[in-house]
Image 1: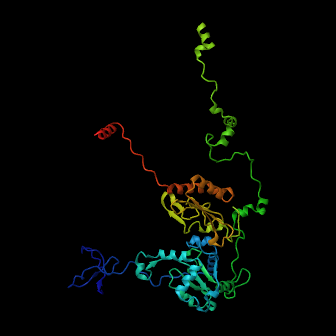
Image 2: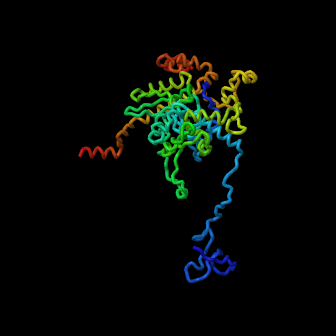
Image 3: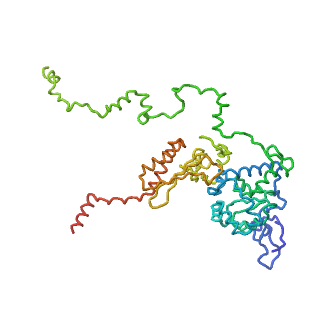
Amino acid sequence: MEESANGWSGEMCRAVARIPRVSGGGTHRAGQAAFGNMCRSGRMFAPTKVWRKWHQKINLGQKRFATVSAIAASSVPALLLARGHQVSTVPEVPLVIDSEVFSKAAIAKTSAALTLLKGVGASADLSKVKQSRKLRAGKGKLRGRRHRQRRGPLVVYDPEVDGKELSFAFRNIAGVETSSVYALNLLQLAPGGHIGRFIIWTSAAFKALDSIYGSTTTPSALKKDFLLPSALVQQADVGRLINSSEIQNVIRAAKGFSTTKRAGVQKKNPLHNRQVLLRLNPYAAGYSKDKIGTKGLGQGKPQRASKTQFAQVIKED
Amino acid sequence: MAHHSSQVSADLLWEITRNQNAFLVKRAGAGGLRFSRDPLNLVNIHSRKNAGFVNDKAVGVLPLAGEKGGVTLITKKAKHPQRPAHQGHKTNLSGSKSSRKISKTVAANVAKTGYRPDLRAHAVSRASAILKSQKTPKDLPESKPRGAKAKKAAAEKEE
């Protein structure tokens, strides 16, 4: 609805809210408020600008670091479990399938792809995705993001060896994504910023990793000036570090003796804690061993006082 | 805990996953509760000691399906960290055995061999809680009326 409207005129005595209003007369629309975010058919508040900074530039070295870290994390079963992948039936992580399986477009149909995934124990992850599919809350439903669902395995292949047909086979299986090993995407390797995506490699793709990313000593064949980042610490197991001879040799011995009283410990109740009882009362050991507590006096009935010498003495007095 | 051939140490894994993982249940109530849904976590509390998916050795006690009940004891094999399918060692302890015997087996498997002695008490108490939940509860005893009510009941019986 296009109307010309006066700007707010600034007169205080109209007894209406100070908002641009539709000019003219002859229709109900005349005199109604226009344009504001609170108005019918008005614009939204602070409309999204097309010149917003939609993307953030990240340094190439950092992007490469993130990608190789995500690939490394995908080979740790614990991180896969922590991401939520159902991998307890998977025979090995990283999971590599022989490229022979994909040769001559053998996996070009969804049914073939499904049997393959089932064979490698990925069906638990697939059913998790299937059950997770939910209608999205909010306006996103109207904007091409109708459903929310979990992510399943990512199939990484080498298009030169495996062909591209396999991507057609996998594309209709919920949650499964395919990617060429030459175009790995960080959004697929670590969705939501959480590393440990369940990746199914073809053997050709796994082999190609060496040439694409190189190693810590040999530079990458395809990326300019890139070496794999070397580990900051060789040994990240804290318990092993502490118990290593290198550290044990240089640290001083623990202070005090075996009998040193430790400060700041909970006071133990000697009635409940036997060791504390014995420390306080060494007689307790013999007392319970000989069962003195349950023996009683063992003399039968006590003598009446009236029949003892004691009573006689009193009487005499 | 003895270290085996896993490429990534449990300490590093814990630092990566301690703030966010699929098993973690965070609630704002009671000062920020942190629970865990990990099947290899005996007390369901999110902590380094109990995080089964992180540690090389971990214990899980799950209910055993079937008429007689019982528990399944899962221990994690530290030998092949890269093979998830071979990682769990399952022992089914049928509910037809007495709970004392089951507790004894659980304690022996968890602690006696030096596997995870620190988890013995947790494993036994979880097993016993599961076994208790599988019992059919007894009916409440019939109420015995006393005083005026008893007289009334007796009078009614005579009539």
